[in-house]
Each structure stands twice: as structure tokens, then as C-alpha cells.
Image (tube, rainbow, N blue to C red; front, top):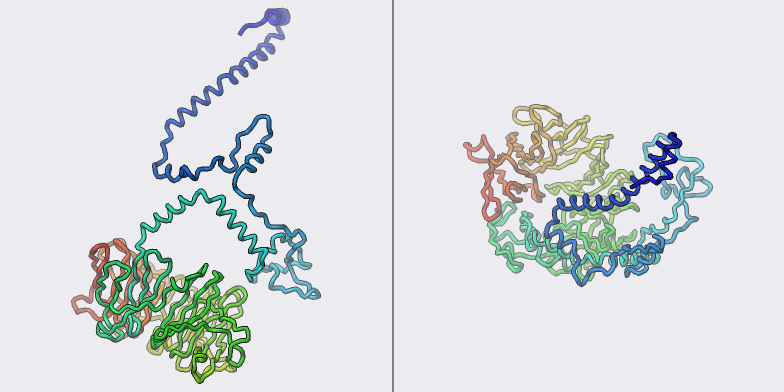
Length: 609
């Protein structure tokens, strides 16, 4: 670079111009140099950084590369920008050239509003359909109410029958499938990878229930379970028959136990259905019927069916009129997934739901099979209802089958009502005291109940206990004043709910049998199982030789059981048959479970007293 003679003469004649003119020229030189050298320097720096970035794994490269026959000619929303055109015009031309349809747009109802506040009485609004404040809010409702724009409120249709909404949802699904069609091979690959990690043809642990072993099976290529049972006759019979050694070759055709019977195949129920979900499946007291609930719509409203296991006849229960006959419209009964059999095969208990699909009414139906040729007419009786929307309800039966329970619970408070099964024939719609309360609800007091030997066994956080207490009382109504801690032979409480640093025991669930109480919980953060002998008032802790394990209780169906099955996780998930019989005297001091891994299956021997 050189200075012109004119500029040099100007600086010599007027030295005061020399400095500003020099900086002006320097600025121009710097700008020109930057424009020339910056792209070269940027490219060199970028290349040096890219050299240190590792290549993605081969698996990732395969997943991120479309098959040749499925690659898009032009990726969606990608455009080659023409400098002669504006950016917006280039993008619009690229979008129009894409093969994907435009996303569906629901219409906006600009005049639609909903109101928040106090409904004016003269307009006769339904207050339950307006946004409201929390029940415990200290602030009054807005008065007058404030309109809130709700342009898309028309899309809500609890009946699921509005053709405009259904058409819009169909177009949304079609659009989603269209723009993700190139990912079909990836989806299929991920799905197959999941399947490869599962044993599709499998079975659950057989559980003793009356004269049968009950269990479920799954089969490769089928989406749903099959409910199975096998008679105990070959294994000594009786309620306490010992589960035989299972010798199964892993095939679909081979039964798990001899004389296996599939009494409910959900795959058959799901044929020609777009959705199928089975809730409860319960054998009747005589084991000649099963009652089951099934949802074919996906809205968690279940049909209640009863199947005769001898004839195969399947009956869907219908809504009854006031005289015990079917309604004129012949409507199917809609229930929750919580049902129970009564004392015999003639009685069923079930819950119906409110508009929010909250189970809130408990019904008893006597002679449900009246249409099958019996001389009796079906009788439906409302036993109890819970109108407070905070409480979710369900029905259950005590393990000794002597009581029907209706459990009502919110997040912080619960209440349990009961009906003795020996009194179920005397219930009447005119009698408001068909069911009795074990203990009236108290704010922030949770409790659960089981029955054995004419006593309630209660686990509760009463008296602001940080952990659950294990208590007992006579099996009478309104027994809260008679609740006492369950004690051992030294008159020490088993679980007092405290944070005592000497024990660190926390109760989680309880299984009450005729002569034993099996308790699961944690001790110093470690999962534990304890067995309490009711007669001897001794509690023993089950211990494992391994330091790391997980253990818990499985569901149980018999109060007279002498064994319990535990779910254990040590090297792999397994099930342990736990004998509750008294061990030899030299084994009383230690209830230790030893583990042996045979072909990936854990086998254990356990004696508890």
C-alpha cells in the first residue's frame, strides 16, 4: 500500500490533518484485509475442529440413514435459496413442492366463551360446568363472572359422537402417518429389538385358589394373555396342596400343569375389535363361573360379563329397571374394573361411575342369572354412595371371605365401610344401614383394613404418625376408639409408626392369614419381609445371604394358606415359595434364604414361624 502524493503534501502542509487521515487509511486497510482473510481463517479453524469430532457409531449411522428406496428427493422444509428471491418466497416454493399434505387446522369459534366466577342465579347456569376455584380457596368467586375466550372449546365431546370432531381427528392421524411414513423401517427395527429381549411364550406363577391352580399364559405372536387353571386333584387335593415341580419345554402347545384349561382367552375377546382391555377376572365361589370386566372403547367404562365355564355361555349384564327387569333400551351395564363375588354364585358386587368416571356407587345384584331360567327375578340394591368428588372408591372382599369392603380414599384421608357376607341376603333398598363404618373419616388419617379371627387388622398413620402403624381391634363398627398397637410376646409394638433410630422400620403392606400376618416394608432403607405368628406373638425377619436384593409380597387368595409366595430379585427376577410352618428348633434363631441359580431360575427353601 502507498500514500498518494496529494495526501502526503496535505499532511506536510497541515500537520494537524496527519493523525486523523492516517487512522482513516488504517481503518480502510484493516477492513479490506479482514474481508479477504476472514473466510480463509474460518475455514481453516472449522476444519481443525471437525478433525477431532469422532464418527457416529455404525448402528447410529444405520438408523439415521434412510433406505435407498425411501429417501426423500427433497427433505421437508429444505430449500435452495435463490439470491434473486426473498427468503419467504423460497420457503413457500419448497413447501409447495413437498409431497406432504398441509396439516389440518381446526376452525376457531371466535364468539365462544366460558365464564369464571359466580353464576348469576337469573341465568340458571350449571355451576358445575364453569371453571371454579379450589375448594379450600380463601378468595371469593368473581362477581360478576368474567368471560374467557374459548375458540376451540367445541372440540370437547364426552360422548365421542360429534362427526366434525371425529373427522378432524381422522385427518390429524392421516397427516401424522404421512409425515412419518419414512420412519416405518426405524419403528419396525425398534419394535423387533424390544421383542428380542422378551420371552413371548411364558406363564405366571400358579396360585392356589380352592380346587385349582390359577395362572396366566402368553404366546408368541399374540397380543393378549390367556387365563388358565389346572385342578389340584393330582397333587393331594385340598386348599393346601403343594405346587408340583413344573416341567415345561417352553412350547406353546405344552401345558404348564396337567389338565390345563384356558377359561378366558383375551385374544378371542379382542377379535374384530379396535381396542380391548380386561380389568378384573374372578372365579365364583363354586369355580363354575367367572365374572370379568372388559373395555372395548378405551374410555375406561367396563362391561360386566359372567361366563359359565361348563357350557361356555357368556352373559353381559344389562341395566335393570325398578322392577328388576331389563330397561326398554336393553342397555349394557357400565361399571368400573372393581368387582367381587358374594357368598355364593348368585350375588355380585360392582361399582358404577359418575360423569367424571369416578367410581362412587356400590351395588349388589342378587340372581344376576335370573334370565337363565331361574324362578327368581334379578334384584339390584344400592348399598352405599360417595358424593364427595375428592374420594375414589372401590370394592373388595376380606381374604377369609366374611366381609365385603367399600374403600373410600383421597390423597390424605380414607374411610372403610363393610357388609358381612352372611347378612347379604337381608339387604334392602329401604335400609340405609346396610353397610357399617369401621372408623369415620378424620382429616389426614389414612387406614386400610383386613379381617381374621373376628378382629380387624389396621395399618394407619393415625395421630400424625410419620410412618404407618400396625394395629388391631375387635371386628365391630365404629372401632376407632379400640384400636391398639399389635404387640409381640414382650409387649413391644411391631410397628409403631415412629422414626425410632434403633429400628428404622417402615411398614408398606400387610397380608393377614388365619394364623400368620406377613408384612412387607423397609428396614434402614432395605426391602424386608417379616412373618408374625399370631398364637406365639413372635415376629421373624426373612434374611438373604446376598447383600443386594429386592423382595415383596404377591397377591394371595386363601386365608388358610400355609405357604406364601414372594417376589425376589437377586441375580434375576424369581418367585420363592415360603412355608409358614414352624421350623425345627435349631433353625428358630435364623430365617435365612439361600439362593442357587439353575438355568437362570432362582430356587429357594424357606421356613418361617
